[in-house]
Image (cartoon, helix red, strand yellow):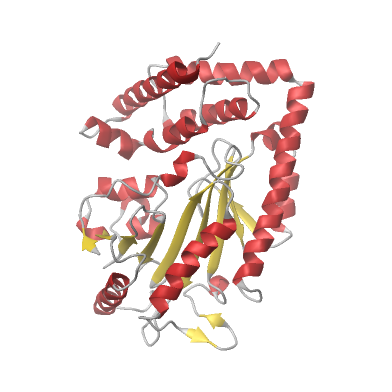
Length: 363
């Protein structure tokens, strides 16, 4: 494992949209919260203790098959722009990079496996947050990936574990398995048919919760929701994963049915909404990210309903990531003011959508 202060060009394999139900479920992520035995937890640990944790975890990671050839990214060694890039890629949490633009926690780091779908956040809320990120709706695949990494690390690290309560974590709601499985879903059909409140209330009653695009504390935007398990104690990891799978499968069915209703009962209205959204994205000269996300929802819906021939889900996934501020600045090679960023964003989107027209054509 090598140290780096520049970002490897990995971690966005899920953009390929090659997973199951990728038009509705963009990605699946499974995280495991772990703390080391005989070490103070994050709320009480001092800087020397955090350094010791980072050293132990990095040494263990070097000896694993999955992380050994990867990259260690110390948060304090990265520029704020690079930390923001990691956040925009959904590879780190707000807490790890420094909430609201502040400094990251002392000796915080991201350890990334080659390819970027597997990783470990070190010295966040817990000593370790292991994670696996995959395309589409694949909770069991994501669980197998993170479980394999966990098993490799346990050969070199001793976790804080209680025989009755399971893995011990900083937040009591994570005690037990320490597992948080989440899916990022796009649900415009349920929003437009005004069924979304009923569905979200239903998943809350069966032990799941929902959040915005960037997880806890983030706003709902563009009809994108993160659905995840709410409890981690009292069930095995496999049971939690299977429960999430069953409920999300229902949500996907409800969304599919809602889209069919829209197409049957309001086809002209939906076609107009879709093509207006596409037209603005395809020809706008200045556009904000919030506006992009709302328009992107309409375009994704049109693609799912086969109203926009020639477009690819992969292209829309690219826009969702690369039209964000830090990615635009990286492409431009300099910082961008609000107006300049909006202009640069519109230009990037026009260029990307025109390439898809060359591939398949739209009429």
